[in-house]
Length: 263
Image (cartoon, rainbow, N blue to C red; front, side, top):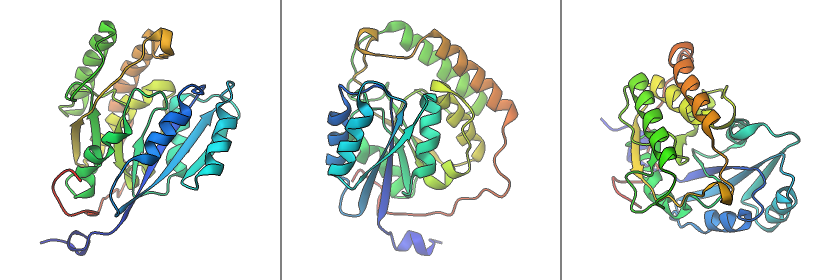
């Protein structure tokens, strides 16, 4: 039997949480792309930019951008706390029904939001992971990053019993209630396996959607290295053993758009 919310979809607000650390070269472009995405008349958007102690002028530019568009909210860290710290700050500030993670470096295309969000909006999913290995196109580069990613995803799947193809993908969308029940404990890029382990333990519905990927190399500012892979392994093993969902956690079924299908 369908619930009242299933029968009467309501409008939704999407919170885009974007960590920013010395991304002056791409910041205005990615902000413009996020705000230009057509999500339909029943989905609004807020962009939460968390400046994580930038020293290249990104902070001043964020002030300018937020003054230009009321949909942009900015939060500033006086000291760098890493991607995990920036995301935790952004998640706490988010007011939307759905939250998606967006990097500031143009590796991922916000035009793909409608396809990523569709399973949540029509009630099929609670969390959606992007997958660069199922997407329509990606830049061919950095073989050892590819190998490390596949091995980390395999280890994560063994520990979660999920069958993801790209656990490390930036694009992850969540119903906000899920993030409210999670306190991020990792640093830097280990936040990806941490979120994956915790989502799996919560017993929510997880979908995976192919996305495009236009990856950078180190000369273009890529920040992930071998030490991050080791931190990811530790996070997978640590949260497999040491974390349990909050007692009484429960999600009510909710639909924001009749479906299924891509908006």
